Image (cartoon, rainbow, N blue to C red; front, side, top):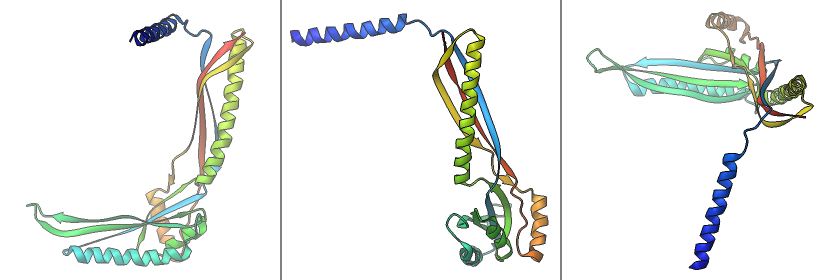
Length: 236
């Protein structure tokens, strides 16, 4: 018992000593907060087309069967062009909802189905717009593929870090110090959101699809930005 009491007392004194040291530890001096950024433009290489159709009727089962048939036909056509990483095919939203009368009764049913086709082979993806007959193009968008985004994010992050270091060195010199050490730093890289074709342009493109068999598209460019922020300790 005596040994346990002495050990507990010693531990309490140790904790008290650490607490006192933490309280009297001087606040850091000669610390400055900095930030730097870098950005690059890169061509979008990933095309996404969302196909959809809707049906309505008085019988829920009939509406569902019509949507299923339209989707199955579209899937069969899209799967002919499917290739991993180049043309990816997946089903989207499949909904069936009642339509109500002013008095609250069910007057019928309406549903919608979607098919999403995307990939790096933008020519093959766009060509499906003229081959899928049971669904129509709802929206089109360009973005960066995961591989392209990761590569560019690494490059632009390196540029932002170099700018942060140069700025830290310059600020330290301006304040009369010989150098600096990094206290903390945060690096964030991000790509701009998907570029979606405007509705007016999409409608015009759909009219052209009937003649050419493919959807005219232009990917444009995405901006990838990296931000570096943190604090440095200026040193003599």
